[in-house]
Image (cartoon, rainbow, N blue to C red; front, side, top):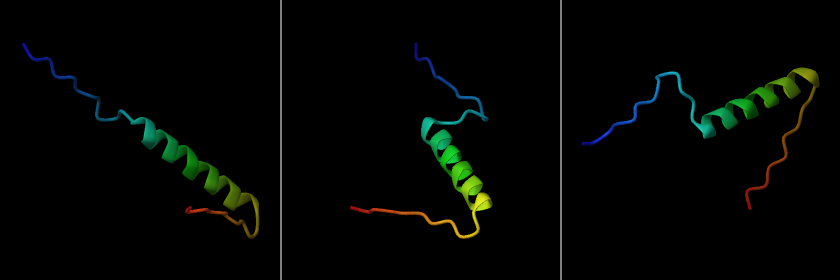
Length: 43
């Protein structure tokens, strides 16, 4: 017997939740400051 686990259509993965939180933080910072800066290191 095979059991299939179904996720609710509104279920959010862990990475989706982290991305949503990061976007929320970026938007809050952008709203607080006149000229916000994001530092990025690709290496």
